[in-house]
Amino acid sequence: MRVYRSVHEISLAASACAIGMFDGVHVGHVMVLENALREARLLNVPSVVVSFANHPQFLISQTPTQLLSSLPERLQAFEQMGFDYALILDFDEWLKNLPAEDFIRLVLLEHLGVKSVTVGYDHRFGKNRAGDGTMLQQAGQQFDFDVQIIDPVRIATIPSDTEGSGQIVSSTLIRKLLSYGDIEQANRLLGHPYHLSGQVEEGLQRGRQLGFPTANLAIEPHRLVPAIGTYGGYAELNERRYQAVCNIGICPTFGDQSQKRVEVHLLGYEDGPFYGQALKMVFLQKIRDEQKFPDVDALVRQIRRDCQHVRETLAAE
Image (tube, one colour):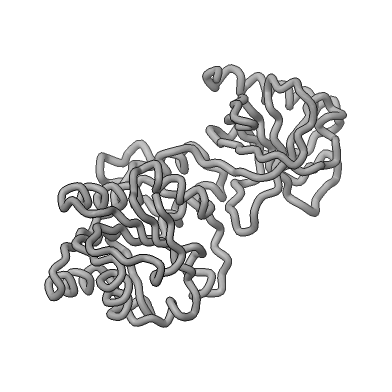
């Protein structure tokens, strides 16, 4: 997949494209992306995903949106799905103030030569978010390109929900579920396990002193960190996978209240420290809330139970 960072770098005679932020690349996003790929095959034209390097809300509302995925992670997902090109635009003042009609003319027609455009049911674009699926369809009739608007995807979130009657899958809902610590439900809506990646940095060495050495992850700014608590899943280090226990919290037993840390203990890892290396923590379940223990011995006993819980509930990797 070839990646372009400016509309002026790309010039296609014809294409089928999907447009969206696609943060998290959840099951609803996949429906949009896969439809664009089908259209490209049917029309025998290149497939293009049009997305943004930064979340539009950063500029529109001045609110730092907590992200479910990084740009490299989204690009990897697009490439694995089979897109030929990705046009990744910086959502800056120019793009924010570009009229919707000019976005269609400049980006879609002049540079992508679109024959088919696929968007989600709630997609908006252009200055003051004036553009939507209806405007695209009207432009399609005028300039001879097809427009596919994908209906919302619903997934049952409570037992009483029937098929197709659950909540609409959205990045906003997934962020809310993760902020509550509802990992399993968030993973269902994502269609894949949520994860955090980062460099391992030197911590306070408490885990090692307790007999459970942990990797302290440096998380990139604006990345969504799940709710405080203890989680089970697996960690990826140097192309190897380990069952893992992850604690997200403020270490109340030791009186630390100032900084939330992401600490990962790799079950079965017996080599030395790996400071400065990249580690990926994949979340599969929440084990418990973080709690303050009366003493260190009680904490150690609980950590042992947490590790045993992961061993028993997660299939060996």
